[in-house]
Image (cartoon, rainbow, N blue to C red; front, top):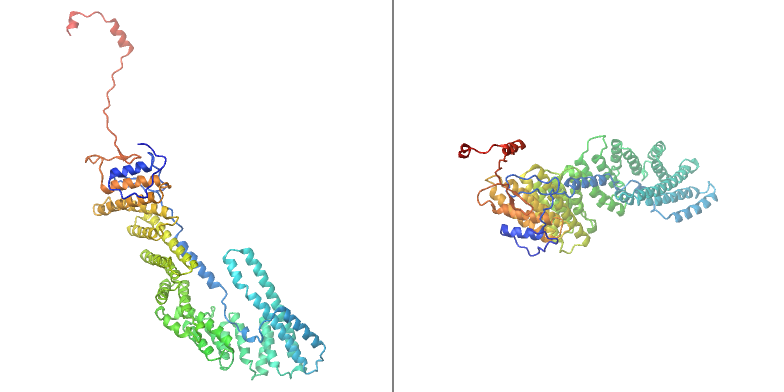
Length: 621
């Protein structure tokens, strides 16, 4: 048989119907010596008449990797700084102003204060206004510092250490400038509240409150306590008494002294008309949600206080509409954490609609709360509940651009279980979403994300399960790997990896056929699998007639067809044989060994030459 240097095209190659044609195809496709099989391939099965050593599948990453990456991402997100409203928001009298403007105002007031005698009625007010401007300057630096948290987090996520360090240094500088402005304000407030000659100042209770508050910000604990106690004792009717209790409570909360903080928050909510009433309810919800080791969490109470916070903001007990909107947003976001432990997935949507929407349409958060719930369930290892929530979202919003992403999360939930049937069912659904998206109206970025998620998952499942089945010989795993290969090749027939995946699929069918053929009960299935293996090896040749698998695929499809037809080259004698590079049987014929003639020695030869002439008697003999 002549070797050919260039394989022919197989684009119009039909399924081969007989061994003779199979041999012809192989002759056109491969040289006489077959390609050596990959190392580590499946061992030959003696029950298979025409056998070969198949190549080993190369897994495309692992399914564990996908799950672990998502788990790590969620853990990092959990550790991320919670962007909650703070008591400091209620201590600010003015919005932050630009540094240059604040500096100009401060210099003007300093000159005016130096020119004013302490006995002048305006002197205490000038001190108060000057300290106020330092607080505005402090607020400016705090805003600049706070704006860097997200960029720092993103830089760290992207492994951009240099950029992250640069941003942290910049943030540290803003924090230092903020602290310096706070210290200047404290110095001025102290001069105002400790001078007996200024004790009649009409806003002294207010100055005393901000003085105590800034001392707390600077971690000057004892001075802070003394100032708050003086405010409570000397000005019991001051409008800042609830704020004083609140600041005290926030201080203890920051020190993780949750029991002490809770008692003071309870004191605050006795002032029902206070602008910090709703905020105190919000912090009480957090005390019950995360008591930081001081007690057991009370998720039911936490959920109740978050709901009360939302109600209080709608009743105007948050100080301002801006504060009310922010508190509603924070309470709706954070109550999901409590609902994970105190509620049921089946009741979530109805409950979130009740507490998560309004009063204006742009504040509706019920859907966002469902997404947060699914994420929180995953973070808590409650994968079944997370899956239920994502499926509910798909049911409620079937045409939403995020439905494919939600399904990708469902697949990751399934990977946390040992149920491969469920894993493939959810992956097949992911493929259905991609089929829907690829010709849909979604944005290209959304489509690309859906496609990549589907492609990677199917590819990983097929190759990982194939590899596992080869090691365990588990029939159920073989079946699922087969489904995954079929799903991939049907969904992504033109992908750059389809050639390799097609070869692995054909190898899988060959392996399954080999395992079934030796048992009389499963032999019919084995013959069918060999026929299918033949067809899939032919497809390998059709995809790329000159590819790296051409010789092996051509050889394999011919042997697969022989096995499928139970072709017997021995004419019914059922002799065993070994196939050569062309797939033909080679028999070892037994030959009779001829006995060698005895060698005549030189002595015998000499004797015959010297023998006496024959006598009549010897001739007669």
